[in-house]
Image 1 (tube, rainbow, N blue to C red):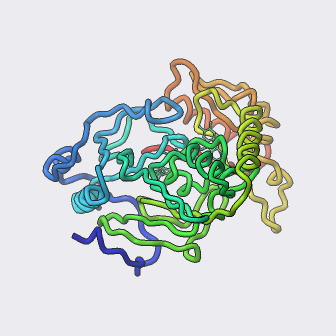
Image 2 (cartoon, helix red, strand yellow):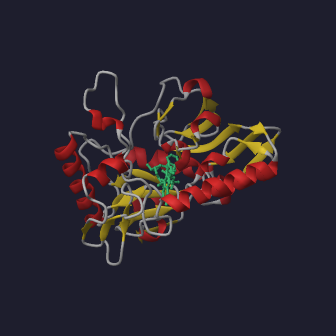
Length: 332
Ligand SMILES: Cc1cc2nc3c(=O)[nH]c(=O)nc-3n(C[C@H](O)[C@H](O)[C@H](O)COP(=O)(O)OP(=O)(O)OC[C@H]3O[C@@H](n4cnc5c(N)ncnc54)[C@H](O)[C@@H]3O)c2cc1C
């Protein structure tokens, strides 16, 4: 088996998720996983696994027991043209009402949630809860992750999205990641290979397995104070108690050559200036507390949220000439 071969990927950054050339699967996902002896469930509602709490089902949900099983799954799905999607904490995700074909993988098994601290180096599995890691490291007197307080995520999802905000991002403290490609092969990527930008990175491999952080020594009580302060700031400015996927749109980035002054405004400010705060479509509405949060109310569907996202995009473009880019990821 190749999954235990650890090298640097000679082909550079990886490609997109697997689908057969004609877009069909020669074998169903459940047949394949049954043949491979991988435990899975079929027709699984994904809504309870996302922070939005809406959307359809996964054709197959697999929670592999370890990297060997995950590698078998990836290789088999690749060969059969079956799409694979990785679900973290579902905090940045909107699953469409029709759900998703193929296999959704959740790295929930404890083998993907190990954490170790050696000096200022912290190595942690992709399935580990980010909020817990923020507290673990602050209590251990290690600074660097306290800036992420209040951001719901798995470690894998946070690195994939370069999670962060006003106080800092995760990217600058990442020194190494291990990733798996579509063939189940594992590669290491070091700081020099990694580029983290606003809510994105150059990591294209489908699965982040674990992450190494280089933190710095600090006073635990001081760090815990910072965690609390940052959490309170978020609680006071964002609708954390309501169902959402965080900020719906990325803030515009103004280049020197751009003449449009509205590009200097945040996405939330532009949505607010367009008088869209409180705007409702079906069960979805724009938060009164923070205009860049689209929240799901009672009987909300994924389609309501998608329609509201489209309405905001069109309105802001029409009023200010700014094309907002979505931060929320929509499946499929
Ligand atoms: C109330 C609230 C507040 C938020 N505030 C912030 C904020 O301040 N700053 C911020 O940046 N974000 C914020 N978010 C968004 C969200 O917390 C982040 O985007 C987070 O990084 C998502 O992580 P996740 O594990 O939930 O990923 P998911 O939502 O499950 O997935 C997001 C993407 O990451 C991929 N992914 C997940 N795990 C892996 C893995 N192991 N390997 C490869 N790819 C993977 C998924 O396939 C998907 O493409 C907020 C969300 C909510 C609900």
